[in-house]
Image (cartoon, rainbow, N blue to C red; front, side, top):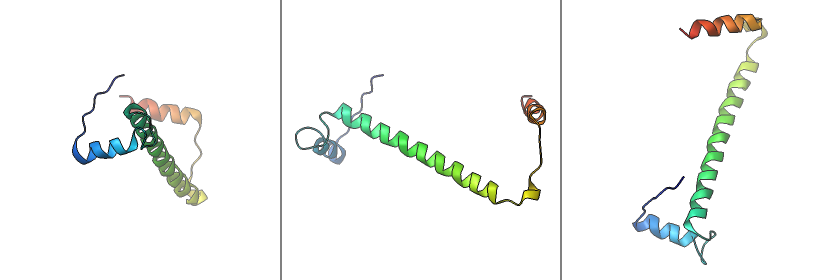
Length: 83
């Protein structure tokens, strides 16, 4: 995939400061790829934290709030949602 992005003003200056001899990246493409990777990692970490919070809440529930279900119970429940 090829992306074309235009930045100007302060954003352009900021990118320029991070690329080339004075920056941490050899070129703009390398910089953008790193930004995308970091954003992906951030989103995955946020998803994981939400899952941990949901599991923490579920495990904190009293044992009598759980009910035993079989695989067939789950299949029947999910089949009812397909309609």
